[in-house]
Length: 75
Image (cartoon, rainbow, N blue to C red; front, side, top):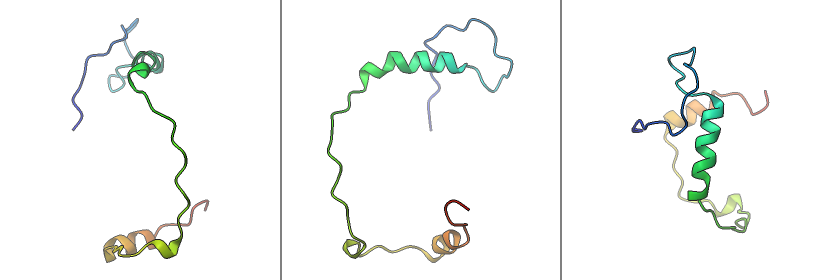
């Protein structure tokens, strides 16, 4: 569960939708201020795997039926 936190960016006007308490500009500003705290090093891409390398994977029949009932990507 996500804990609600106080917005860092001050609000200039009341949001018209009570379900959307912050604007996109406020969110972008908050993200820009936090970006310096999240450092990610460069990583090389993992080596491509082969389907033959996959073994021991078990899919419950209910999950397989759910995926089987979905349309193909791009339909």
